[in-house]
Length: 101
Image (cartoon, rainbow, N blue to C red; front, side, top):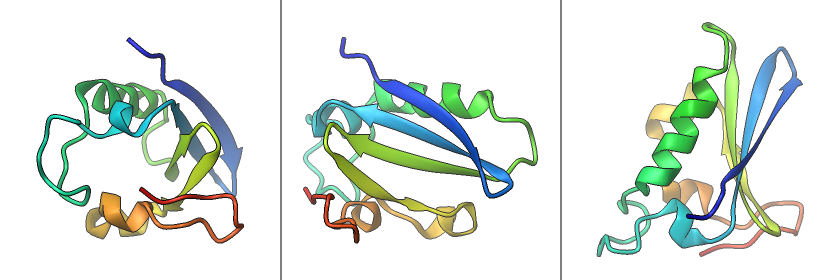
């Protein structure tokens, strides 16, 4: 099992939860034949997200930041979370350091 590193930072009246994945397969289920926008998260990724957000106090604005070794996947503000998809988060980062799948 590969370790998913996490970091919590306070910023702009809320908390940013940053998860560092070593590989794409650690985030998205490699056995799921669907394309990435519909591809299921791995159980390991789901557990990491849930356990890290359990530590965030209720009613505190929170942002999830997904990272892969060198790349930052753009964050989705909580107000847009329902309409966000993995495909929306997998575009190239505007600061030039990001990558896409």
